[in-house]
Image (cartoon, rainbow, N blue to C red):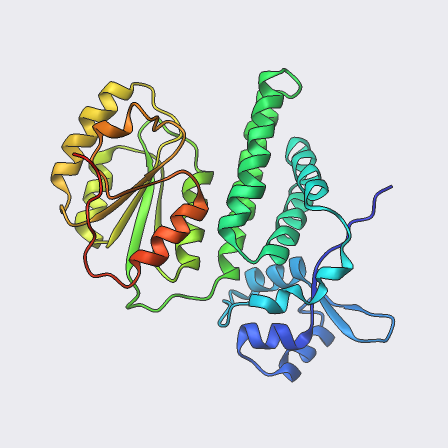
Length: 299
């Protein structure tokens, strides 16, 4: 039977991430508040999944990014990333939330990037699930259940990012009406937060009119719209044009999603289009210091 190998943190790494003393972390370990294992030499090691559980149970937030410190235990895992993706795929199909969490945590610990996690791990895995569904190898409920499990795991991951200052620029986004795919907009929120934006995920299946209302109330600097499914592309174009006319013209609007085909995009007015989350990260990083956006669409 295959043995799972998980990334571990030292008490110093945890103390730096939480901006507390190392003695406090050791005390929590001794009290059993933070799950701890011991090395052969007797040193404390904290499983990354156990650290996430501690954050959720105590409502604490990361203060200093884990950064390169999470790579301390990288050499303990000899499992290839492809094998890790296979474990994640199998866990999603089985609805094994714990195994899904462990796989996602391990990938993030290796790459330290939500954008890479989104593109090279989660997106690729769900493409494989879609192929298995098309071929009849898995049931519809297994694919949908996997989406729900992944969504819950991603919600927990928000605590791995430091709180963004109140004066940081605000970005918000979601999916249009008829698009129930929640994971892409969840990932967009995490990626944008990682780029030091305040991020507000409005959710999925939203009429464009209510997104416009959110823009009017919160006045973000950037809006993302994830479009994975369109029931009627022609109707969407008309609704989008009306929507675009109601929001500030200098608002940065970023579009993405597989439903926005090469034929459809020229009919839409937007600031930027991203094919993946790494492009979104680059765009958000570039826009962070700018006061005004520049419309690069042809309309």
